[in-house]
Length: 284
Image (cartoon, rainbow, N blue to C red):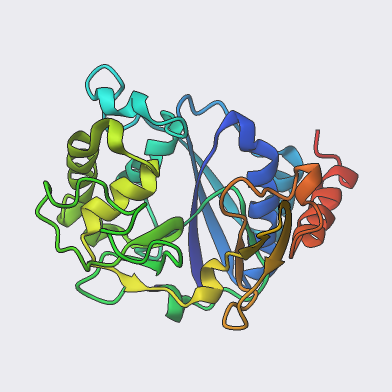
């Protein structure tokens, strides 16, 4: 990865414009290098908040907007319609890996519910050959045969102990991704899984990788574990592992900091601080 430039990719959904804008701002504040953003949407008409675009122009960063289509639509691949979290936009992740013209040769993909809290050192993020992807092993489902791993792993002929990664933070060697035709492997995984799919694009990614991944340190996709009081299931307490630092915080699952009941979670205050920065600088 070229230390002089950082290529960062997002898929922009109309429901996540503000959240993705906050994430994008956090990258610019912490990257310590010039950033080229690759922002994909189905129509190409969606844009990040104007305050983010102004900040990028002021600091010499670049935002490239891409209009892409999913690998296959719901008519060609009915499996896309079976999962409540699967939208056409979610599959643009893989099209982004195919189409983004990077300067560094690598693309750091971030979900819109991520927040960069520390310096983005290229070394831990870079996939090690022959891997095309670096990602964190999922702490809840570490192998593809886990309960929420790849549901069709046996039919796909995948080894049961292969690693299963979280898809919220992924660094891709784009040339190797394309040479290995991994988007086609993603589509094959979707077709085999059909209505059994539980985790949408994450499950499809793991079906394509089949354990061929460079593990990211946990601090580059820091997800908070949660304790549930057995006598009061409504009482939820956040618990963060000491091994998880503060480089990239991922608000995984339904516990989003913009929801009133989850504003006080770890790093929720920082998310709202950056949101206020955008609003006070004229987000509209």
